[in-house]
Length: 451
Image 1 (tube, rainbow, N blue to C red):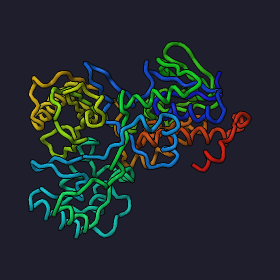
Image 2 (cartoon, helix red, strand yellow):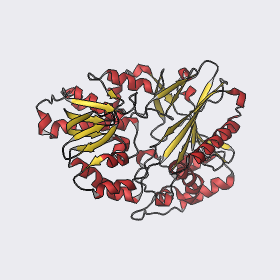
Image 3 (cartoon, one colour):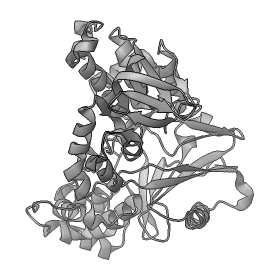
Image 4 (tube, rainbow, N blue to C red):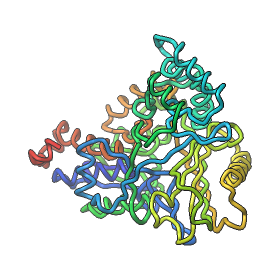
């Protein structure tokens, strides 16, 4: 038996374990269903190329997280990269973010965007959906030219039924002055948005820094342990290999919709049934290794138009030269879908790859290697049902000492930085609030508390 059992050795689970250990608490066990820890923060090595599970770029705007990277991984192991991101529409590339960089678009589109911004709604109505929010923030022109088609792609969900609570720091704001300046000339440098610069490992792909973090743990991760059921009354986790574990506190980072199908309660819970209404789309991630050293100097490109079924392409070789062999380039593309047949997904991926080759003038002969990765849980759908019912679901689990955290455990849209901070917060919450764990808690030094 372990006082604390952690399910899922992605970033949030690993961070929770790390911060428990840093506080002197080691009476825990960390389980992972895959053979390799890391969750979606993993890399694939194929034919001399390194491919991630789609683009994983590390952003830090939190003092503690920055210190954490220095002390656990070593900041010198990362490249610091100034973003070069673009939108491709109307047969031209414009700088990101679209709402502040209209230069190069047709005059009619620029006029439509400026006029829409000037006449945008002054107030945001109660219970506004994402479309209402975009109109209020940017006006009809910008909303219809970019936000409607792009967000429709990335969620594969009616944006008139999508909430706006996820936008936060992810959507840069703009002003009329910014729009006019951005229509007259291209920007001198890309500064808007939370990802104006990013960190990326110098070697090994994004999995490098997860490996380094795992090496900091004193206790091993138990891999290939897939949860079969969770008995809330008797506090037992049973695994598909027949093993089981008792717990006082259960921290789970597995997708919440899956978790709710595995719990056992004295009676069928309405919360468990409600969990079936949680929506999350999937992403098909295609990766290409290309025999061309100068494919592009861009980092990624947004694709709002319907001629491309995918919503974005990115270029690994511009994150780090180690991602592709000498004389080669590499790219990834992302296609999101919700409840589609496998055959339809496959056909769409083929179309996405073909349209990408055409856009970038890549011949079939230049493609050295190809890999498609399927991510069943990708973007959580922020619809009104989620907003209304999610707190009750999480509160119900907490009443049984089950803490569902992280991007998919808490059913939210978050970054790698937030995954680490979620684990830290969970560890501290348990050690401070739970009497059964307090006796082993060693407070952090004053220096660490100030960070």
